[in-house]
Length: 228
Length: 409
Image (cartoon, rainbow over all chains, first blue to last red; front, side, top):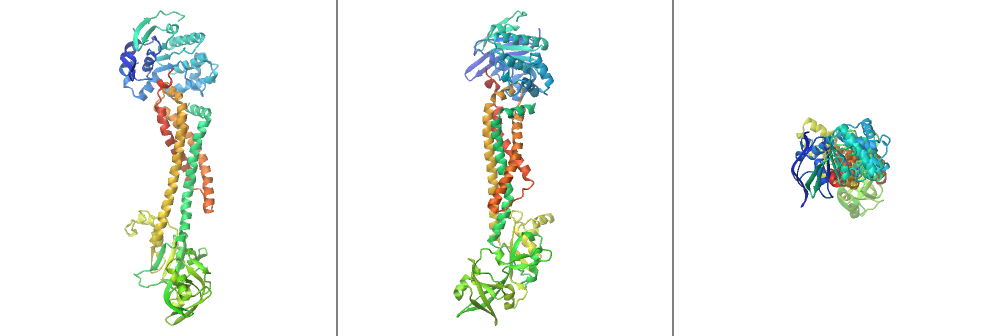
């Protein structure tokens, strides 16, 4: 069995009196595609934010890629995010005044050194070789999401996080994005944590965990098919 | 990449960038104008303040025991190291005389002086020296004396002798008699109203003191006294003394003059010198305060504009943080933006401020000013200071942006 890339023990996150994530013990092996499902407010985004170093736990332990995230400073967490994590947002969150290639290069800039050729290649890999110089406002939702994916993978992350990445896409675009992620994962062998409330999207993963009111209530190991 | 981010950020938000640019430009312009005219204002004010009266008094040295200075030494005053700071001087020879006019008689002081003497000093420009130049507050009803037997008389003495302009007064000194034609009545508000003023040479003859003067009043442009200027020169090291001697303190100018007047002792008229110094210090303080206030107002304006801009850009900042930007990288983007604007604002502000200083100088002092070279870097630095000071609060807000809250789906 592959070594765990994520290990949580008694991981909690509270906002005042509200406990968004109740003590969670979870192991995620390297290379796994984990789908996280649940209703709104179930704690799935909270879990993803903690794992991605975007938020800090209230208690418990959280090891990601051997890093104890609780021990990292704010700049340490920033370094962890740029070196270890790629994030795909539901609403893409592209910088509106930068072109597609510049949006990708921005992630390179914060990581190390921008390389336009590499950024172009990343966009070609996601099928946007013809939209390099377009700004986000000139791209469709699916295209914006593919720019977001290119930005997420440009620094070769070990962990790819998707927060409802297809939530704003139609069915055809959803399939296209999921296919793309599957191909990229096969090439790059990164671990995927995909938060979704869509059963069909969750089915693209190796395993699905279900959260309800901040508690892990169920998990399913899925049978892989070519259709996802 | 940073350049691309900055360039696109500028192009995307022209209004916000313009507001910040305007604030920085105004700050730099006001700083340039105020600092530019501050030096000039001090100089012009010092000139204006010379109408307060002489600020250095040269008297015979007690050690010499002579009781008089030599008239032949007077031209040397215009040859000393600080000659260009000496705006004028007037010698006096005093004596007691018995004045009579009509049926009235009275003992009083007869003063010989230069009224407006054309002084020719070899190697120097011809200058006009005398009471008329160094005591502009003297009000003369009539005119200033021009001939050897003409005189002006103090208002109080004239009243007692019942003499008016056009009248005559006879001065008797130890049997020697001199008739003076009164051409003016002088009002000064001081002891001069009790005296009769006549040409120096005439009074020297009357008093049998040819070539002698009792004292000399000197009017000089000086810098305000500071702690160093107040030090006793006799306790100074060689370097300190040189620095003191080469600074236009009233004490060092007095020392300079004393050196060329044989048997003299020159001392500052402190009530004049200290009042001038205090006024010039206050003036400089006001200019500096206005500059600081203007820069403070600009920084506040920059801060307000940036704060609004940061609120608009919170999503962008959150995104940068989410993809791994640390505090230094976030800071370098926003400070970089502000610094670029500040360089341009500083350059534009310098030229505007330079013109503003010119207008102020022309309006207030009726003269032009030459901008010192240091003003350009000062304008740029002022713009930097405004930009950095105005960026502190917005940058802190930017660094506190939490991606989780801002990017929430």
